[in-house]
Amino acid sequence: WELFFASLAASQSFRNLWAGPNRGPFVLPRHRLVQQGLSLRDLVHGLSMPLSRGRRKPCETALTLTDGRDFRCPISLPPIATREELLQVLEYGTVFINTASLHWRSPATICLAASAILQFPTNINVYVTGKGRSISTDVHTDNHDVLILQTEGVKHWQVFSPPARRHDTA
Image 1 (cartoon, helix red, strand yellow):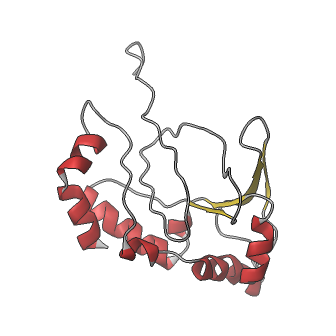
Image 2 (image 1 turned 45 degrees about the vertical axis):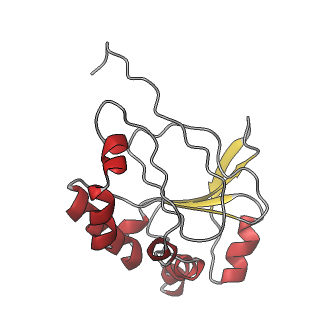
């Protein structure tokens, strides 16, 4: 992962879009290392571990039901112990797992490498959408920098430049 992020940081395209006055979306092509970064098997293992020990899930997890327009409803994620249970839940929406890097080794390894190379704190939030769903989440703006690493499957991403900053605010 260190070599991956070092190569990315050395890229002029990345530097032009990640920092400076012309900031904008930076979409990475598919990369073999990224595809091995976090699998459905890893997710099921991470979600099932607290259950097997009689504890609650360690990070914020939910299932977001959305039609991609007006309806968006995050609900509590039911217990997941198998891949089949995860796939059943994905029939209803997108599973999101916030701060996965604080609780699971494979995302933590990625974050440590990214932080060391990019010289700022990083975090991993995981979004998993089932096959055949055309909308995974509603259109939104994040208030932080986002680097999307797609690890499995196929998805059509629509990524927009951030809105212009207002000069009358800090």
